[in-house]
Amino acid sequence: MKPHVCMIPLLALSVLSGCFMSAEPRIKTGVMLAPGPVAFCTPDEPPCRIGYPSGDGYVIASEQEDEEDVRLRFEALTEAAGVPVYLGEAELSDGDDPAWSYIVARPTKASVDGTPRFEIAMPSCSDLDKTRDDKFGIVRPDAYSCTVTDLAGLRELLITDYAEELADPAWWSDGN
Image 1 (tube, rainbow, N blue to C red):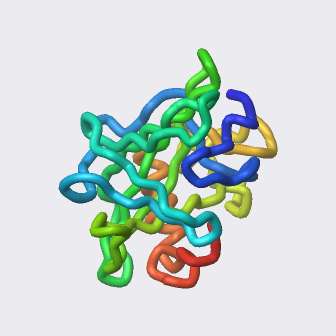
Image 2: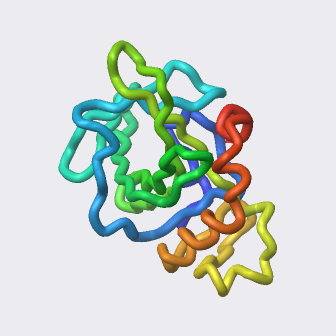
């Protein structure tokens, strides 16, 4: 997997150090976050991007002709501070070399032009204790990403190591 594949058009971010990646999709069946379209928002990159239902996930149309649309699928992860948190998988394509990057999302009470608004954040593996990688099914192929080999392990890692962050509104608004 190429390190530059960590670039996510959805989030309009540059190269992301420490993102969780996979060479294959790991969420088997996605859940819909709301009936109809959903606004996916990050604090550091307004405006929100609208995801339209497609199969068991969402598609966000690319803003550039030479980029592919972003496909997202979600599954329930946990509840933090009384708010459901979802684990998301964003399909990224680099020609014939697809990859999947992992994000977390939670609903807000706001909407974007009547569309339910979800905050999105990207947990980073770069700050995690490397001695626990095997426990969570994480492989570090380079300094830029962590490969997820076990979705259950990633879920456990996020629930245990990110419990405080997932419950903290400031973490969601810090541009993770």
